[in-house]
Image (cartoon, rainbow, N blue to C red; front, side):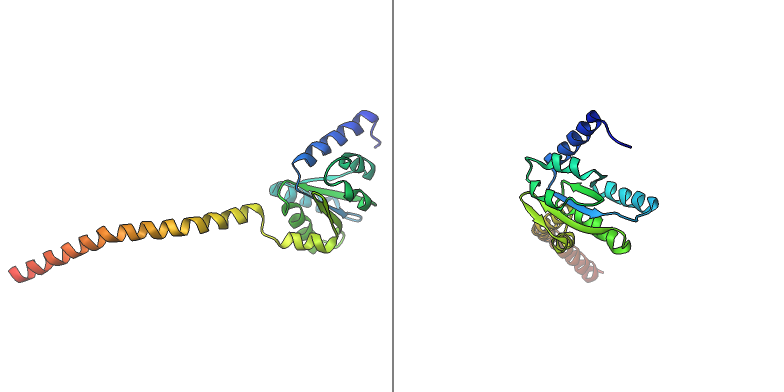
Length: 176
């Protein structure tokens, strides 16, 4: 189904809005994927916060003009599905993990602001921890000294109470 000029402008506008917050774009060929596979991929992408869309390459090229992803336009050839995410790792993880179990999805390239990546770069990006994982590790690291300090502070009155109980028990046994 061909899009008229207004619909094309709307698609470009929607994509431009997504690119404003984007930290990564991953493109892959989807030739030969079944509808069920694409539906499953879309569900995985949605749950990871990845905007996934099949686009005409000419529309995608127009949308990236003037953005930090403009250099990726050379790689926009063939039937492509675009994964766009605000988390630099999320799009790469979703598409690389899906490509492992489905050989019809072939990664072609990716980009971060100002940098185009080849397939190996996208795979390397997918192995990195996500933003949420890094924040959780940071929070755990920050909490460890505080938790130790609280346990140490709590130990002083606990030892005192145990000492008093021991003295009481000793006096009870001596007095009996």
